[in-house]
Image (cartoon, rainbow, N blue to C red; front, side):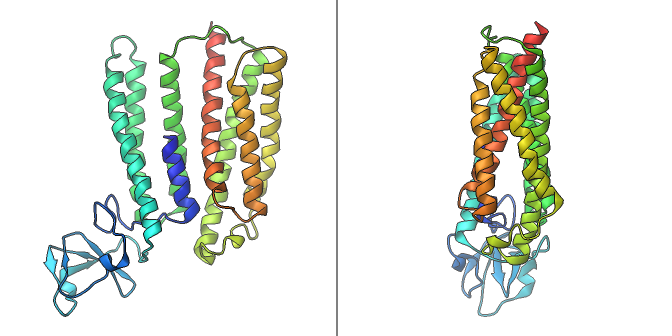
Length: 325
């Protein structure tokens, strides 16, 4: 799942979201084209049914297997109507394609997960239920991915796409927590547990706001072009300033967790990683704003945010278990 987050963030970072104009194939190919020549109409050329070409800055889909003659016969082709994005960039195409391959691999892993979880149906029904719900949400994510492409990267759908991904991560971590042996080296602390709940809620708020800021950036990119990254945060809205300033509250809460873990000797090693990820989030956020999105910063920022949420959620599960005991 984290590899999917990483691949997806690279797609957004490079502006490759429409590298493949269709779904699940790419320009009608199982393996994407490597040159524009492959998707350009030419005479005496064979095209299979469903293959997409670019002609006069429009997308056309072959209605059937055909071999072109000296003239373009429009009756052999159907205009692609889901969107009007008709550009080809081999780097964008293969970046998006690799993103899809990662999701396919994850799908197979989920099938193995379900098979393994089903064996526990009598011992603990929660295990197969969590596995099946996570797999169902993966299928929903696949549908959302198709919708993202069909609607030419509608920002709101991309945001939902990411939030559902976080829900899947939470389900998988809950599943891992259930089957993991209990660790008796941890100590329960009421204030620490309360701060953990606040930290998880704060992270969700921050990620939600981050996706809203990302929506604004996407709109700026559409308006000014991907090459003009210096305009990405031109005249930002209140959401951007909230997202930036809210980082202070997040830092304070998580430093509180770190402090309590140290002075009370609670034994939670994940706290150290949480503090590191918050530092990484802050640094990449600063670089994106003040250094015009250096390469890699967006991917690191998004991935570290997703991992941070996962660690905080799992740490809360650990603390909650001790409270129950």
